[in-house]
Length: 152
Image (cartoon, rainbow, N blue to C red; front, side):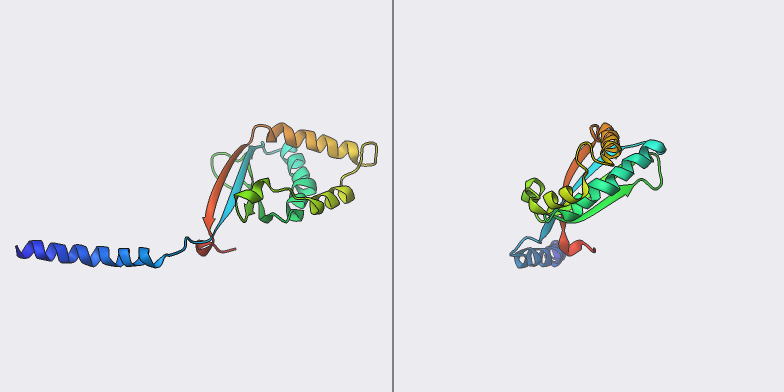
């Protein structure tokens, strides 16, 4: 009988603090939504051109987009698959993923993307074609991230 009482006391010692902490969490922790698009681009000339398009078009448009809170381009550093290129965007919520960029992106595009026939159009078009050749085979993941556990 003494062992049973000691066992219940030990169980209560472990479980009661957990239950009290759960009751203290009236609100769910704040989260953001993170999208990760993974593309496989072999290292070499194509990778350089792919990254040039990212530098000239993809990244600037993401920075102009008010729905994108953070933007990162990751390239595989070490390991078995050095062809990975990941584009990471952080949004306030799921609605931000589909929300239109609107005027900021339109203004950026008008100022930076050459019109057909203009100088630089054919070069940028070729870079875009190569970018989309690889991006057509990309994969997407959507995650949530608790901001109380993050450091940026």
